[in-house]
Amino acid sequence: MGERVSLTSKADGFVLGAYHVSPEDARHGGLVLVQEIFGVTEHIRELCDGFAADGYEVIAPAFFDRQERGFAAGYDADGVAKGRAYSEAAPWDQVQGDLQAAIEALKGPVNVVGYCWGGTAAWLAACRCDGVAAASCYYGRRIPELIAETPRCPTILHFGKRDPTIPPEVVEQIRDAFPELPVYVYDAGHGFASDRRADYDPDSARLARLRTLQLFSRSSGVRSEV
Image (tube, rainbow, N blue to C red; front, top):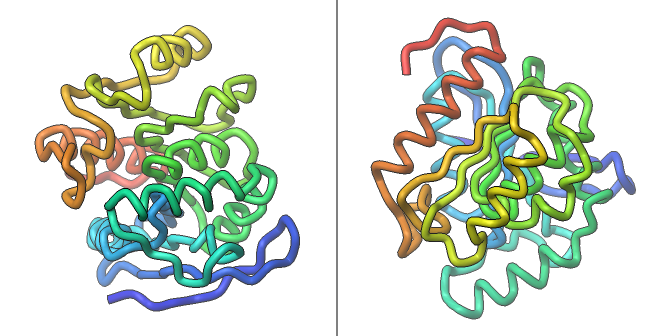
């Protein structure tokens, strides 16, 4: 359904790959979809296709192309270790430049959604990048690293109540710092929106997706039944 395209980072001119898919019907806006630590996997491409079916032109940059072209890991211990190492080798200033390239490759309004590591990257986009209409951040464990920065667009956050990597006190820290932002906590674990993960929770995934689509619909000024 989609195609592979190239983006030139605004940070250092590096050319990275991306998965791109356009809606078959009316276009409601653009969407940058940010991967988990596992790369632009089949699951990430399926998420892109799903949002395209909802009317969004979607780009999912391959943020770890500097470490390994076309990286797409499995969900086993080796995949986690490699993905974590690659994510830690991607400084936020560099990620910001990659995000900006993806945003500028799309016509507005452009939204951002991210999962796991991408949840923090989506927060980064909301705080630093130009041209972001709204952001939806799923279980961004590293958001506290950027908690001194304030989103410049409507932003929502999703966390799992039973996520051992993001304890309740971290969620409360974010709530205390940004009492005006919607912070949703689901009766689920980490990765609850991915049907490839052991913590997949279909009810929580559907509700979080509904809230995300409603946010994007409002930010795009498009009436949408979701």
